[in-house]
Image 1 (cartoon, helix red, strand yellow):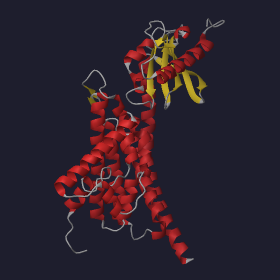
Image 2: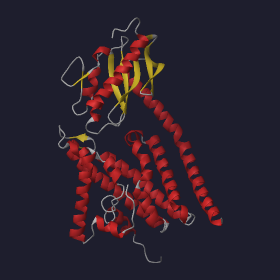
Image 3: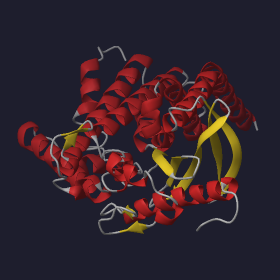
Image 4: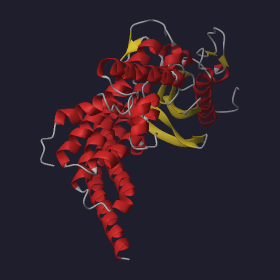
Length: 217
Length: 188
């Protein structure tokens, strides 16, 4: 425990080598559902970033009080608390956003990525590294959603962040769920290719084989 | 037995902690949320009948088991129009709609308040081109067709179900207003 902790490495881990969507392949459901545009993806990313970081910190602080045999219900309860806080704050102070996102916010409770980070990181580490891990995973998730949203909105609507710049819709299928799977799969492949080609990394499948056996949502 | 006791204590402490956090946040936000909802509703109504001095609730009705209201828009003591909230059963959601009419129950305008229709297809019901078709229509004109038309409502290509949902929702609202405010037998 005395060795110096490399916070940058923990943060970067969530962005690339263990990116929640492209590498860990967790929380793919929202990655398809809310990425019909950059804006929705970004806002969802921010909400997840907040919930992930706060849950990580909370679990890390009270990790010695959580009874190991009821840790999953405890984690879920902590996540649900922060999700409800996010929900209420957004409903009160970000009405416009809430009208678009309200439905999805409450689903964050069931996002596999959050529970998985609590179990595999926050429940074993100190507060600061846990917070940094939450930030890294949150930003990684946010970037993944924005990237998918960028491709889908650009090709599907000919728009970005809601600003239309082609009169027609180039590839309508991209904003339908089908297109979400296409884009996510192709980007995941691209991530794997870059990692293997330039950094000698492993594929998503291999990361999964080694790692813990999470259920994916 | 001791183990069980520990589990109960641990869970109980977490639940109480969460409860405290939530009750604090709720206490701080609930009035803000309530006020925002009331204001949004008023603004939406005022937008439907901008020349009215006040818009008063005149009754309630239900459609697809959803509660709706209708309002009288008044200037002085004179009724200058009616506004009704209504819903349409869309492709993937209930579409909430406001309809405003003149005193003869001829539609002035409609507005889509909220929906969860398919992005890129069904959400075109929000576009002005579609909504302004309803202006000037009466009950007998409210019919959805798939060809170009001026006296009926033209469906959005690729979003027939959403278009029909809006048309039917508006139609039901106009029917209710007709039944309530037209004297004598309806001209349907």
